Length: 538
Image (tube, rainbow, N blue to C red; front, side, top):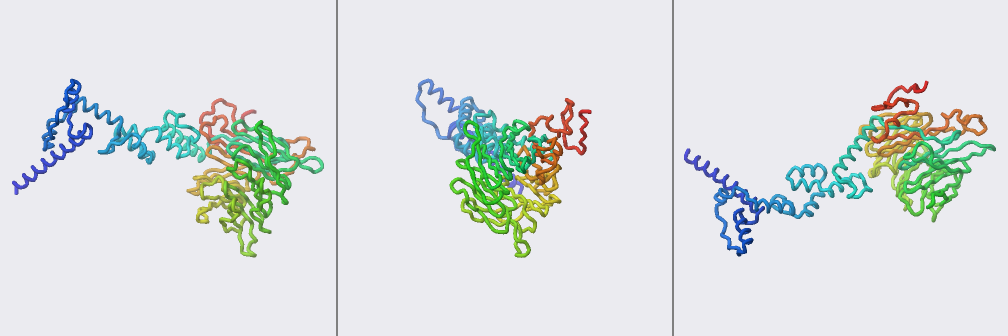
């Protein structure tokens, strides 16, 4: 028994030696060529340099373990051949691929996989950190879309910085850290409607004049410039609704029974590009995005929804007598609006209808609520998602693929008047003057801000938030030109707030005007406090 175990142990030892010698031989053959050792390559190179013809080669020995005993050391020529192969080809285990083909394979990997591949070898590290791969990843995640690959020296570091900035912005949103400012408009005028897009804000206001007439003013702000308007123009009647296009500087306004579409020409002078007559007073107005040649507007007037464009100015998208439209929003191809049902008499609750703008067909009917849908957001919501606000004090998120509600939040005690969402948060405004920011997945409130008058407009992007508190009473005391002081009772005029959560924002702009101190030391200041006292100037 002892003799048999000794023979078995001897067999195992020889088998390990042969496996080790075979592995070394395969690696050397992959680097130097089949059947070529370091000494033979050196003799062949010296003979070629001396003018001799290459001699026929002898067959390789049969036992790999015997060859491994004499060829352990690598010579200079073998190392040179391996270095040249590493420059021109990338080893994938026992297969050598061209660099371009290996780069094509690595394009299917993500950030984590590229980081793991960079730890395999020096050759794979160079390949995994190629600028083409990280530029493609940066574009896929939506960062620096208007930048070419030659504009940045290191795209891996650029992607890291963009993700760090995004995390900082999300932290600022959750902690309510940033700057807040109040946009200024003419004294004595009352806000009527507000709209914004990508840092540009427009607002319509009016003031009571003699003979019971009312004059309207459209003010345009740019958040990159400051709190003062960069442009104003007048209307002869009170402005009921307005809209701003996301493509170019196109503004649509509704005054009385007329809808005007205006845009600047090449020299910067504003001109009217379209005028539409409607038989009813307009309640809601929107411009269809991604339309470049001729602007298309969608207007809701009582129980009729119109599609206003040059070739077909009076197209009716929806009309049901006795069912007024309570809210409206449009995207590039669809329009969503809430309609008030006939109630419990005909067993028809309030719903949100989704229409196709090209075919004028109703695609979906969402919701089943006894309260009126007061606001809806389709354009800025994630794909296949829609968020609504209702008079029953709830915010609802709908999945358009299944036509059902995903979540419902008890938001405002007097009803929801404005709402918008993205992939992780919801911002809602209520009739009580509160602006609330919610975590969508957790269903919890992050923070809230209060101001006088109902919140009629909410818009945000990754770093900015625009809110508008618009009063219901348009003729308060102090709003008439006959009064001695146009600034009297300005708390009744309405407020437009602009919040900035960017990490690049100056610290001095991070405080409300009533809390802003004149001290030079403002490092680490956070305006998220519970007490505000105007103590600066005594």
